[in-house]
Image (cartoon, rainbow, N blue to C red):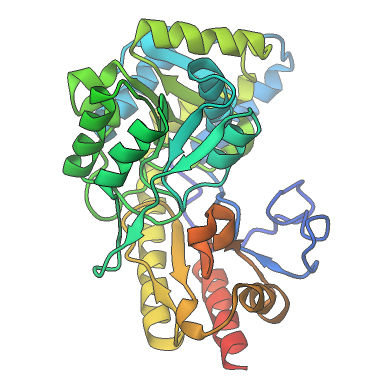
Amino acid sequence: MAERNLDFNRIINRRGTRSLKYDFAKRRGMPEDVLPLWVADMDFETSSYIEDALVERARHGIFGYSEVQTPYFEIVREWMKKHHDWEVQEKWLVKTPGVVFALAMAVKAYTKPGDGVLIQLPVYYPFSEVIEDNGRKVVSNTLYLGEDNRYHIDFDDFEKKIIEEQIKLFFLCSPHNPVGRVWTREELTRLGDICVKHHVIVVSDEIHQDFVFKGKHFVFANLKKEYEDISIICTSPSKTFNLASMMMSNIFIPNRDLKHKFRKELDAAGTSQLGVMGLVACEAAYSQGEEWYQAMLSYVAENIEFTKSYVAKKLHGVRMIKHEGTYLVWLDFRGTGFSVDELEYLMIHKAKLWLDSGKIFGECGRGFQRINVACPRSVLSEALERIRKAIQE
């Protein structure tokens, strides 16, 4: 049976499907007719093999407590080996209901209230939330925008913050959301060596690892043997195959002591087995989803190039930051002359667009907007045209 869901130009009505992206505009203070390109899920049907596996499981009709055995791990291991040249071991694996949940568990497991946790702003905003909501302090090694139109790491500041703030835990975002960087081997090694030197545990959120358009994704724990010992690697099929509501992630913790502490926090939080549908979807995705994944990746790559060309030619005063990974594009509106509040009003009430405002990723994100380009090209074109008209008017 062939893959059926390869028409990424097809517009699918998601309204009335309990979609966070489409059905909650009014509740979140937006006009009801706003076009949403904010939250990181795709407007594409997932692989038909995943659909079929879920339908078949649903027909069984019994949804009792469920768990997976070694075949599940073998499927996950094959994906990691094939796509990221990483040999994982079954004893490293812990499954959680999402990566953000895993981040929160790591904060609890490896730090005490009042401790600082290091992040690199502007970064995925739940990083800050799970730190602050658990009574810890956000410490930022803020990325800087270079003359090459890419973000870079200030390594001197990175080490200085670790020493001054007595950092025990660092959240790495790789590939980086929202700035679209795919960190090089050299950058990751330099970070890793500093963390080893100062006994810092690294939680690496690699949920976007399957979306690399320039460069190569390196799994942090796979770069050096000593990095394995300080790493919690967070992965999930949810971004790759558009399965966010399935609430399942594969977390790899090679160090037995770190895994034990993490596991203890999961137990304290009352989590045990995950939902069976997430497990079924993951198996089907990694074992049968390759054709869909490659086709989707090509389509998104074309959308990124389309956006780049459109911004350069038609959005005067707007700059698209050089894009290497994820399907989330980082746009710099500071050249338009609008204040942050004016820009917000323009996007929401003039362009009727719901994007993610840069300021939610940290103060250094003010004047930027994050746009999700994993949608039919006609929708993306409409969104960019709305921005052009709003700026022009």
